[in-house]
Image 1: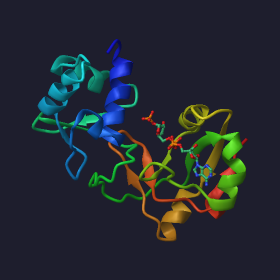
Image 2: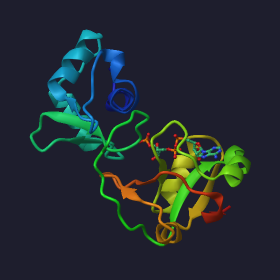
Image 3: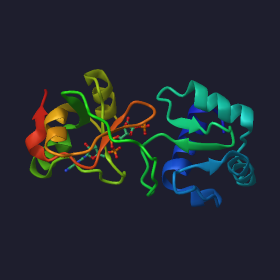
Length: 180
Ligand code: HQG
C-alpha cells in the first residue's frame, strides 16, 4: 500500500465493514488482534507492519482507530456497518448537533427522517464546518440542525464516539431544520 491514507481506507474497510476480505474476525466489541491483522494483510500481498499501523493510528486526521490499552488490538471508533458493541455510554448531547448531507437526499430525509442506512447509527457533528465536509463526500453539501437536546428529553439516546462523533439510532424529521 502506497500511502498512509490508503492504509487508513483499507483499515476502515476491514475494521468497519468486511474483515472477511482477509479472513479476519473481529470480537463482539469490534476489536481485531493486531498481529493477526498484519499477518493476514501481508498474506493478501499488501505491505503492512506494526510501525506503519501505529503511524496511521496516530496521524489519522479523524482519529478513526483506537489501539487497546494492552497494545494488542485495534478497532474503528465509529462508522461500522458490522454489528459490533462499542460499549459506549449514553450521554447527554448539546442543545443542537449537525448533519451534513447532499442536496439530493433532502426530500427523502424530510419525509422519513435521518436513517442509519448502511451504518449502525446516524452520525452527527458538533460543528457546522465538519458537517459540511461530511456532506461534500456525497455531492453538493447541505446541513441540517438537529434538535438534539429536545430528542434527548423525548427519550432518544446519544453516544459520543472516542473520536468525537455523535451517534444516535435515527432522527425523525420533526427534529430537523434545514440550514442553507
Ligand atoms: C443519508 C464519515 C435519504 C445521509 C463521515 C448520508 C461521518 C438519507 C447517507 C461518517 C436518509 C449515508 C458517516 C434518508 C440518511 N433518505 N438519505 N431518509 N437518511 N440519509 O456515509 O453521515 O471519513 O453512511 O444523510 O465523516 O455521510 O468514514 O453516512 O448522506 O462521520 O471516518 O444517507 O462517515 O467518516 O451516508 O457519514 P454515510 P454519513 P469517515
